[in-house]
Length: 434
Length: 168
Image 1 (tube, rainbow over the protein chains, first blue to last red):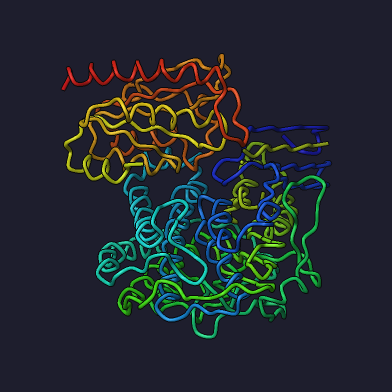
Image 2: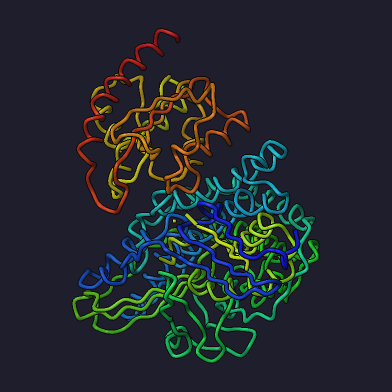
């Protein structure tokens, strides 16, 4: 059916599957022109920033971890770093290494979930991982095993799987022994092998020819692939310290969505997450992860968002590698946390959640009571870029029947592994054709 | 929550029956699976393990790996009268997915059971209880209609336990 013969057409589905959270997509097409694209997030506002006010600084890591069941570690890390910045303390040495190890666990479990169970079905035309498991049971099993290893890292260091309880400002409540960490070594080696297979597996997928001139934003550290810290850089000139974030980025209220849209004041939309990290920090990957990327035909700068599944797989290799490196060099720190006194001030923290940079800012009083909080999650930073992709993507596929077009739009959204819960659950989808 | 004890013991395969209460304490009637698990813990013999799960379904697959008989309890949202008790033999038939679609878990109950079935990882006996919820908004406390169903489900679970012991 040719589009120009269609006057008005509306397509509805109950929700967009395989993303976390409740949202909707609205697309309006007049003849052969896309006239409106709205990526709506209608998850009710959650007011976390407001109910942090009046709370003690020490509650921030545990309260903000509740924002997300997939990346609670990211919230704990960014909030802890921000508080430590406010109090002028620095967590270093083995405590810092233990934080990176915890983050490795979260990256592995989050990426494994997305690569194998949420994203891969798109490249085979399956509705979901259950359908895919009928034809590829071994692959799905491998994904589950990889995810389990990530979970085990988080359970061991964080105290439990979903919202870890061992993280505190200044370090941890309990520091682990080397023997305890050694229990992960063989599992991580097996996980690294599975991740390497994931890179070569995803490299063979059929990718749409779709590239855009994105502004990629990620942390950059002098000698590490970024988890915890670094300057904020982009491929278009951004090079700032984390405390300068508010001078360069702005959040806007948009009528149709409950999540704020974040943009760069100077240039607008930008792209955070695995693809941004990879493009801006390729030289900081471990030799094995670099080799895996090269053998997959992947090198920076990759501008095809559909290839983010290969990049996530490369990052799983890195996270396993980094975890093994940390465990190999680990010695139990003398104290589980650095002692400090809270002081009045403002603290800034930004770490690399699996989906991209997660910025926290807190103003606290002399007793460490939170006066003001600001949290900018990765998904709200990517919203504009997701919409921009759809504006560019849809015109190329206008001749497709609406059901196929809908599926392709969903695929384009899933490239970003959006976490709508973070940004403010079910996605409704409408296409109007006039 | 005595999850560790149960996991260890069930791994040792000394507990033949595993009961999993699923839900979120902070989303109204979604808590009913947890409430029933808490009631049941005080009443079951040592050879029955009861755990509470709030996370995603992948975790259920892990927890039932060594169990022969598993009973899942969760809130459902299917349009029937609040407090209605649905019972499904999931080892025999797929769950009607509309019942469990309200789940906010990454992989819901119906999805994870079908994934486990595809991967030949279902326990020999799998029963699912679904209790029709009334409200799933943020907030603590279950509605009176759903609360009424709690004791009825506990009674029925005790009967299930007896009949499964007879089978084994």
